[in-house]
Image (cartoon, rainbow, N blue to C red):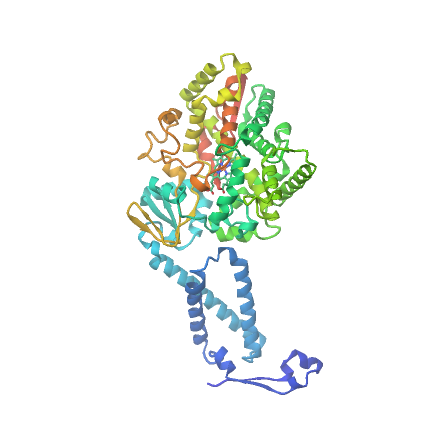
Length: 589
Ligand code: HEM
């Protein structure tokens, strides 16, 4: 059937005011109706068929080859606009009544969407290049599988471990995601010469390097450059900043001890106290400021906001595009109160620097801001970037350190021989007790470091694994080809408990570290290479100080019936492992 589309002046808005004389002539668009709406009104089957084909084509031509994770708001806008245009087309060109046009558009939208999702399903389930790798069927099809598991277990790291126990070393844990439980993958994915990059998971707030924090910078060259200033600021790779922070961390340890003293042997939740401690340290080392959490033994409102929504963020990390959509929605970003706090501290820091009261950088933000002033290429590239960095600083350095302190105390108290050995070590190093204590001497007790390494082995912070994007040409791993575009990770919790690499893997045995370094075994608690944690030195300093001081000064006990026996069971996964309450009693020695 031939359609001749007639648009008359009565149909046009301008005719309503009767102003445009030319529009009062019928406008004949012969053939246009045929071209645009061949199915109208002859056959709904053709409309359905064409929409389905359009869905399949857009999956293969757009959604598959293009990284759309960070464009979903835009795509949604385009989709809605396209539907509005189609409706308009039905009315203006097809001559439809409004209701009929809306119904017809709904048919197009539904069948198009079915086409997209059917195509995604068939491709991922049966034709994907990762087809040869085993894994649960629904994990192949959608990341919602991981989200569902996470809702049930709240322990993503255990879900991954179970998958490895069932399917082997290389498991397809998502449509384009592999979890690889092999030491060789550590070098390939995270090593200094690895060709991997950071996947969309990392662009949670923005995909532009100039608007991202260090950890969200996905461009390898930009990241490498920016990392330099962080290494200086946090005293890694031999830089001396840690000497500046030492006395301030020690002051926080003293405050922690004074708060413990106030408990007078009554059991106290050390998960909270270590959290107060680590956030206060980061406010000081980061901005020369104070959250006053230890002093007030209560959580700062800005941090409470972050903690209250952590479970939700943890859940969203299973589906990166959702995380981005929520993260980039004004008002939905739960970090706003915290962001305001960081922003204020940043401005105050600027004023201090402008008044030239601080000659040498006294904290991490000073390093970053001074680098910006000096136009150092390693400086944060924009105001937005330095603001993101200020948030990263607090988040990356606090719950991580407090989590490992809590775990270390729990492990020491549930493994009496390690507690005894620690006591013997500190008594030997400080025969005169507390008056003998210096950090220099504490640093020289290897057993303290082994306790931290062993605690991080059994309870790594980022336990499920940090994802990496493989280069387009793919990689060879132990003779097996893994195609480009795959997102792969090594799961620390699984590999660090694997009996093939560790004797008595579930036993807490700090002494196993006596003859090995953290680089010579499959241990990736601070990651490796270019992407590794620049705060490792600071975290180790905090742990050495807290462990040596507390055990030198107090007999510590784990009261019965207060949750110590279900500690591991009650630990959950919110991107980082989150420890439950740990009640401990302290009696002066
Ligand atoms: C025991 C405590 C800590 C653990 C287990 C830990 C672990 C990690 C891990 C595994 C990464 C790599 C994340 C990734 O690959 O995406 C990382 C990155 C990072 N950590 Fe830590 N961390 C700890 C303490 C700290 C501290 C005290 C700071 C100080 C601010 C800090 C600052 C950072 C930063 C800035 C990054 C991003 C590095 C980059 O993008 O290259 N961390 N950390």
